[in-house]
Length: 243
Image (tube, rainbow, N blue to C red; front, side, top):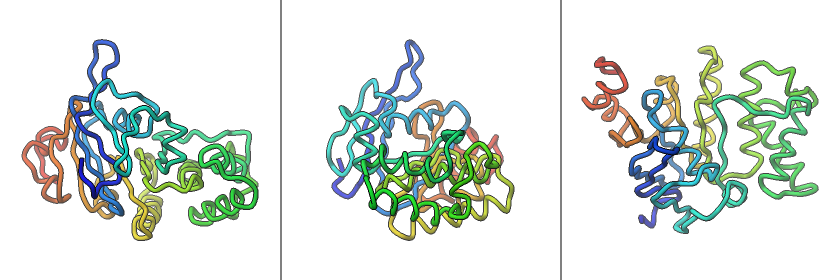
């Protein structure tokens, strides 16, 4: 495996009974880059995230973080090591406040305590534009603020790699602009990002490199514009119409 990659998947396969969802996926994530992942529904993108984050065990293949095999690590250990993820549908504790939700992530996700945990929460909420809503319950938030909270909770674990799963879905154009700028600023600060997204124009403004998946395999990867113009990507993902 490459010495320069912070997160790697090699030959990863995933079966659910007789259904094979991932077919020998290889992925190399360089430190400090923003990598976009696109593909049609059912391509295996979210399943790949589950394998990388440790919520799903790979059926075969290897995953390494910072050069160390982590196949035997559960999601909690991977989170404490620096791999955080968000979900397509935000999953806050609805009865807790924004602050409390983020504190749970800092304490249980990163193992932080006391002033260190509180500082991580304040920083994350400020970074995501939620400082003024810290005492609101999660149940009272609209979609954009729930997306911000999902991101704030991930950031409170002090990740080195952030896996974003369709965080732009369902947002207005103005909200997308704001969220994309936030992700870009995180990348510029040195955070390594992998972003699954169907809203292509938002994704392409941020990512340095692009991977297209289809039917559980990597169809193409490389420079974003080159990938989007690849004939296989155009056929499988764009319905035969170039981006």
